[in-house]
Length: 157
Image (cartoon, rainbow, N blue to C red; front, side, top):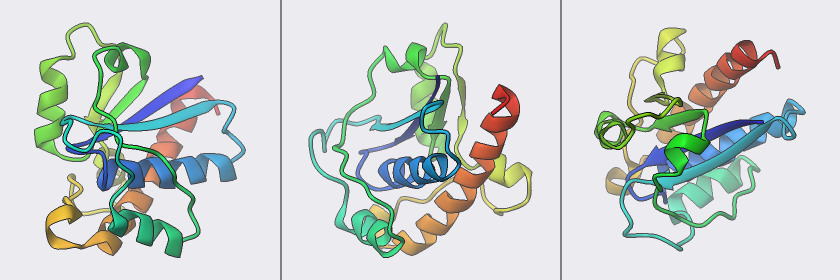
């Protein structure tokens, strides 16, 4: 089983959106028995809370289900997941600070979509502050498609 973890700061906006969108793509590809998807935050402020209403709203408009709760990343995640994908450079730096010995492919979530030219930036901006949830959805959708292609190629799926 390939395990994928999306990481942002509080686990209520970007990473749960990526988790839901990517899980939806995995399901549509018939790979839900081969790919496990989760999300977490580097901070613990929102642990146990549902996703931000802006994230839930954009997911609902696109008919993508999500009912997860925010959690903070744990050290065991660094060894249990195969792909750990940060939404921005700050969260990636925080992850790498604790990642000694991790064999996970740890990088920016949009790095795959940036490399194939489907997006022009490598970080997913935090819509918590500016309300740009639809823009973030567009980035997450493109990033998820590129990531799924990468995982399928690397793992023969």
